[in-house]
Length: 152
Image (cartoon, rainbow, N blue to C red; front, side, top):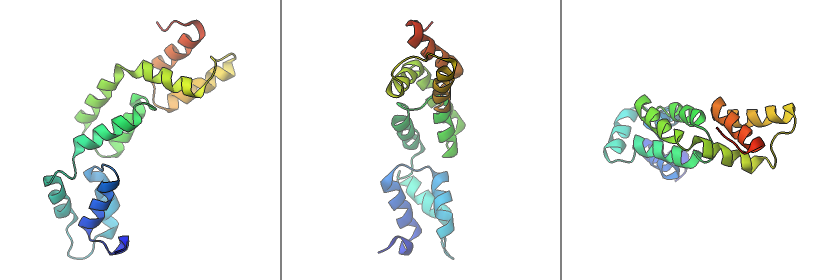
């Protein structure tokens, strides 16, 4: 049976078998495939009632997969794009704050061999960490810590 002949429920289950999806993501992906007489909302309600769609698992999955490589701002952005509740996102990002500096140092160390020697290198390393969602304060502390061993 090809993907194009699957029912909405079958398509949803196939997507959910690949990774956790939020309800908003499933609506976006499945809406183009709704046929006359099919009720996407009812299909998703049924899957949610059976715990196939679980917003908490989606949130935990994103945090688990991305926290080692991204800062809080980028993770917040990804969670918002998945249509998750604002309060849940705030709580998840707040929990990540405690490890933000260590995670930024780890990301920096995987990419760069030595501290910045010139203003251009400093700008490059700063941009690298900022685009991964680390705050300006954390980036300054990482780069200052690599230069003089102090991160205060």
